[in-house]
Image (tube, rainbow, N blue to C red; front, side, top):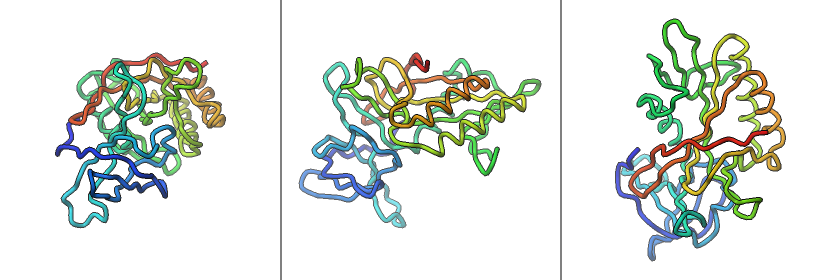
Length: 242
């Protein structure tokens, strides 16, 4: 996925009310939309370098959107982290269509945002004649805690997610009905070596994922290559879920 227009670089002043942030664009302070309902733990420090997209849509209340944050990590001591949670579904759908994710390759039809379960929508539904459908749930991952253990783990979630736990239960129901169900954890950062669940942050989600896997729900994880010009899937990461 390439950004449609060049991103603007600035410095984060503060994030507040979850979906708002003030950013210094070199003397001009703008209020921007933060498309992320999580805590953004470790990614909201004042003074952090950030990159914004800008929309020319006159109907938008805020023209700028927070896209990237520079965090500690990576081979040069810094790592770009994607914080826009509206991108992962499209990134994963494009990768599936291109055959990039082996576990999800080869299906004839791909549909997005399909209703299922109890008033839910699955991010991607894969279908093929003669094979069970595949329900694919995509989760954005941007948490890494360098002061925890070896500091190399991508972790999800970064706050309590009752909605995420609900999705696990509904995907388990799909498996019991004869379908496949696959969790795709997409790590929008470049400095992680493996994935695990942040069970100390949300033990209910951790327990739910354990039950879901026991019922047959699958899980894969991919990290991304990120620049101010584009974000794309880069490589699979091993999962440490036990």
